[in-house]
Image (spheres, one colour):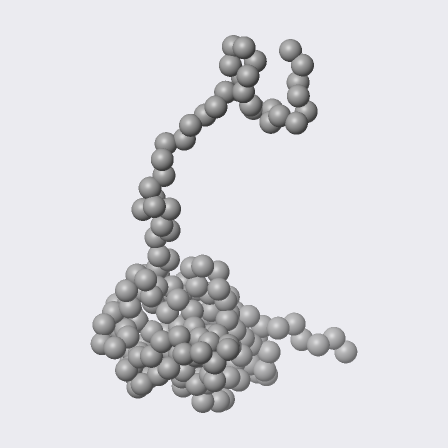
Length: 188
């Protein structure tokens, strides 16, 4: 029997040499639905003195903040959703617990945080934004919207930057990780 180069090497043939037709069982639409990505804890790591993990209970023990009415606007300027308020804690509160590891006194000038969701979506905040501008006051790790816990469809735990002009661009659903980095110093 010769090998047909156009046929897949694992193709099965019937006794008479004709290709075997395999029939797959029907697939229900319910089995095609991907479960929502959710977060039950946020890990702070990287250039910190101690790696720290915050579950929902740990977040609720930190000082809380409410946003007040907020429109979540995307890049085009379209309103994605509105909320009476989000409840959470300042991003800086989590970073302060883990304690930035800055070897030199001026290393804060090159420090930044990457916030990553379960789906890989990542946003960045510089140390200056978080500790030296109103952005830091409005960068929140949130767990409630309009008085209700964030559901699985909203990620469980999220991050929102309420002082941004386009809030949706730095909104992270199912926040999983906060990684502190130091940019390389310039070579002279």
